[in-house]
Length: 341
Image 1 (tube, one colour):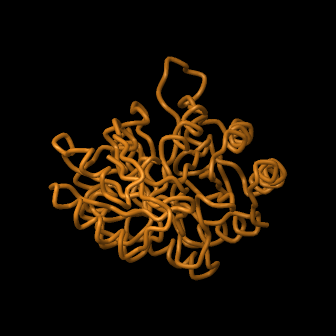
Image 2 (cartoon, rainbow, N blue to C red; image 1 turned 135 degrees about the horizontal axis):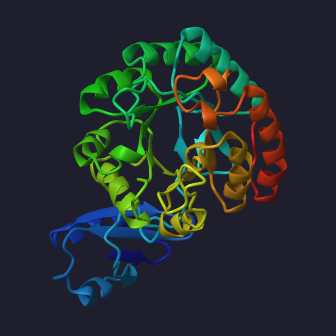
C-alpha cells in the first residue's frame, strides 16, 4: 500500500504520519521524490481501513499495490535509484552509462593489473574478475579464491577502479567485505535466500544477476530480500535465460530491460558475454542493450582468450573492447547517456 501525501507536507509532518501509520501494524517507509512524497507501507495491509488514512488532512490518496515486491517497486519509489560503486565514484542508474569489464577469472597479479589499466583507458568504470568460480563441472577451474581477491585489490590500488567479484558462499562474506567494492550474486545464487539476507546487512553495492530460468518478478523478489535486510544499493543484471535455442549459450531477454525499468527503480545492467557465449556476438548484443535503455554493461575481456582458464570463447581482447566502446559512445549519447573515455 502507498500513501501519497499532499504537496507542502513538511518532513516533520511526514515523520509524524509515518509513526501514526505504523500503529496499524505495518512498516512505514517515507520516500521523498522530485515531484511527490509518498509513504510505502510494508506488511499485512489487508485489515487497514483505507478511508481512515484518506481522511488525514495531509493525505492526497491511498493506492493499493498488488505486486508481491514492495521496496523494489517503482510505485514505492518513483525516481530512479542511483548506486555509487564506491563513495564519490562512478554511478549506475544515472546519466553515466557504466561499463564493467575484465576477465572471467583472475589468473595472475600481472594479468589482472594489466587488464585493469587497459579497460580503464578504454572507458570502463569498474573492473570485474572472478576469484571464486561456481562452475557447472567439478573438474573446471574453480578460481584462485582468496589469492584472487588480493590480486583484485592490488589492481584497484594501481588503477583507482572499483572492483566487482562474485560471491558463492556465506563463509566468504568477511573476505568480500574487505577486498571487493561491488559484490556480485551470480545466476546460480539468485535464490540463495540466506546469502541474500546477509548481503542485506552490508553497506556495499550488490549486483544481482537474473537466474537463467527465473522470471523478472522472482529477480525483484530476490532483490527484495536484500533490501528488506537494510541494503538498498542494488543493481539488477539481465544475463540471458535458457531457451530451446542452442546456437547461443543463453538467450538475451532484451524485453527484460524496459520491463524492469518500468517495474522497478533500481539500475539495470546487461551481461552480453554470458548471454551470447560467443565473442563476436558481444558487440551487437551490447548495442541492443544500450538502445533498449540499459544503465550499463558487464563485459568479459581477456588478454589471451584462446588460453583463458575460463570463458575464453566469449571474451573480447582489450583491442576489441576498446573498438566496441568507441562504437557504443555515440549510441549511448542518443539515449541521453554519457560514457567515460
